[in-house]
Image 1: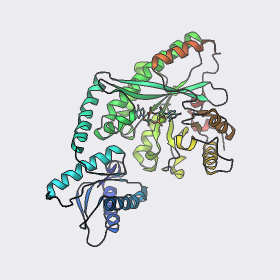
Image 2: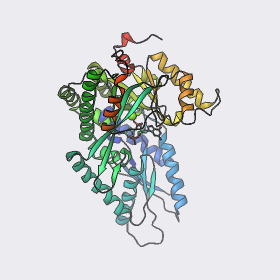
Image 3: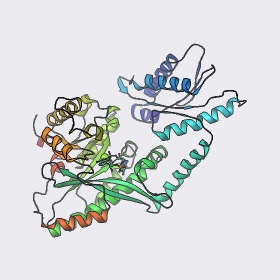
Image 4: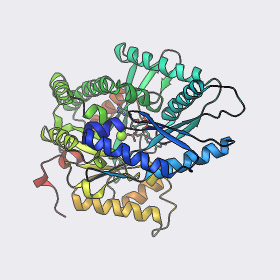
Length: 421
Ligand code: C2E
Ligand code: MG
């Protein structure tokens, strides 16, 4: 077993907090086992459990599930609640004559597979797994090459006003045009990028490309009178916390002559839960240079409501899971209630709301009726290449120039300009 994101706890809350977490983790782990089982810490954030009964897959899965559930509850370290999910790799000795070293190696490979399948899960060792792991490692090397050799590209998805379908912004979404595998979505390579730290140069590349595109669109728009729109870029926790982040951002903005007020950074909700002074000061620095901050996938379970108002946030993006099927729900149903609560929070804190993953017009209408102003989704516009966006802008020249300040740039104004509760 290995604690996911243990490094970020150490980095953000300090080593003493990391130590506390390890102690509590170990206590909970032993609490999940029977007296005859053995638990050990192998080093760092790696633990091992040996279950000495005639074990079968179902029994292994049940034990793993029990551990995952026990670790899903937050830990309190240095007075802060932190979520520390665990990944588990399992191998079964059975009747084999495999020695402990070989079994540990198999469990290690299974752990690696578990992490790649998505953190907070378990995976059994199976023959051929080492081939899969080798492929992942190869992908890491390939990815380094991809960043260097311009194999990455950015697609843009419109963010629109739900009332009148006007495009107010675009979200930059990275793709990898892999030489043999074709066009890969971020889910195929951002986990590897996160683990290896490659997410930092990758994110820097995306920001650079997206700002270069935005700058071109703004010049075209100025010439033709097309309505301006903002650019939203996903920024991973690791990227945000990297030492050179602020200077990279400033440098990119300068190079492409982009006004930061047209830029929004999308950050993960989990970043706020860490309640770290470093994260807060980094977000303040982003906000201070005029870039808006949006919380991505809001409402997926990590949100720490008490933290929201402490952070310089301007927008919440309501997660697709809360949006899908909203048209069918009755007005008192759970899903509608959750959306209503999110809308009330946003209104109280003066935050802009963007609903993600709108696939049906009925969903758009329902969200609009509930009071959500902006949205994004296949129904409103799929992610498209920069070239297609060029064409869209050229077609939109007949639109009135309008007010230069769009939705999120208004929300990006200093807090004193926020609508009061
Ligand atoms: P996200 O920020 O939640 O982005 C929205 C994702 O939902 C995109 O997937 C988009 O294609 C998809 N989507 C939009 N509308 C719909 C819809 O109506 N139905 C469905 N089923 N899906 C819809 P994509 O492009 O695969 O990106 C996945 C995630 O990868 C993003 O989720 C974001 O968290 C991450 N990501 C994308 N680009 C970057 C990047 O440059 N840097 C970092 N760090 N992460 C990125
Ligand atoms: Mg996003």
